[in-house]
Length: 116
Image 1 (cartoon, helix red, strand yellow):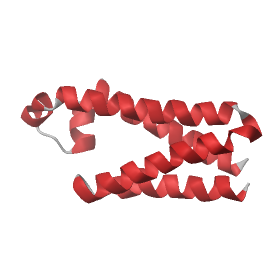
Image 2 (image 1 turned 180 degrees about the vertical axis):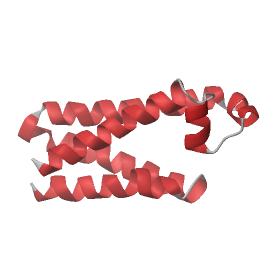
Image 3 (image 1 turned 180 degrees about the horizontal axis):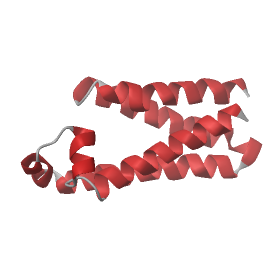
């Protein structure tokens, strides 16, 4: 039960990231969240929307795994591993904050799912 709650929270986080990157990138909320200037946000708007779409796919995969019940562990593990790798890469190349926002929660989710 705890594992599924954590997985659901991670999925919701990625839906939120999708909204930030696809729809709020140039708005004050998106600018603050990613520490962007209006000019930088305007120049990277298309790339951010693409990133947001990928975050939506990660969320969809986690929701899919949750919908499968006990048989969805493999799906949840796969998508959590994808998030962990993306989070580690993002932390190394873009912002250390990504380690705490994406990678560590994914690692916690992985451990919890493996324990069930």
